[in-house]
Length: 311
Image 1 (cartoon, rainbow, N blue to C red):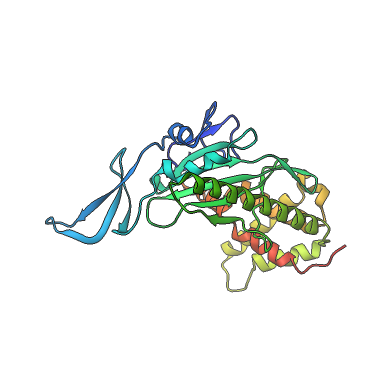
Image 2: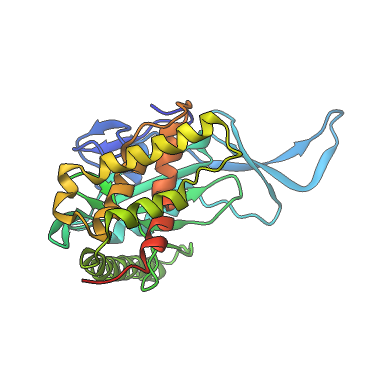
């Protein structure tokens, strides 16, 4: 398991990121958190310097299970506990929406809960939409939701930034049941809008011709080679381009060959699955974070493809 990824669970089938321990069922958010080892709380504690003097206006967020300090926050910061952060998500759960994974990153500073929505089709391919809910305890952010659709045939993520719909948004935390129901409806509405927008975008890109020369020019712009670069840097740039082309000619992308959608899926394949040039201990964790939050190379590829001609 990747460094800094603590205990986590997944239901029935191993998720695309390949991490976790299987459990049979997690029907509620509380059960999902318990099975993932996230049924702990966070308390604000006074901070003292050597000699015992108290640091005014600041507190340490401390985990109840082991005393780990998760972050330093101001007095005004309000802790949202794991259980209450995701309580509203239970309103999403029915026969077709269910929790897939839950876990923590960065030593408990960030936790997540992943829900799978009903399968759909994007340009004829089976696609599984996921809603990822995250909460932080280091003072860095609020309760956040992001969409991550997965193309089933190759497990490629399709989390492109769209002008027509948001892929990520924040939700309010309240204890009122009606407000929780409202936030659940908002999340489903935003998720549906994103999937509708993605379907329209994919159809447009699948009907947009891209020549091999155009692909080469885009790769040269994304991974340039200049005279002042070292031989190692030049080799690395060439290696990335070669890796991309291997993905571009993969069998699962063959039906989109010569189109902008094929080019985008090749980039998704490369950033989702290829081994890194430097094997760091927390590569898989960081790569999953980029996949959830959006990957710069995928968005840049989409931007560069935007101006090509249509069939």
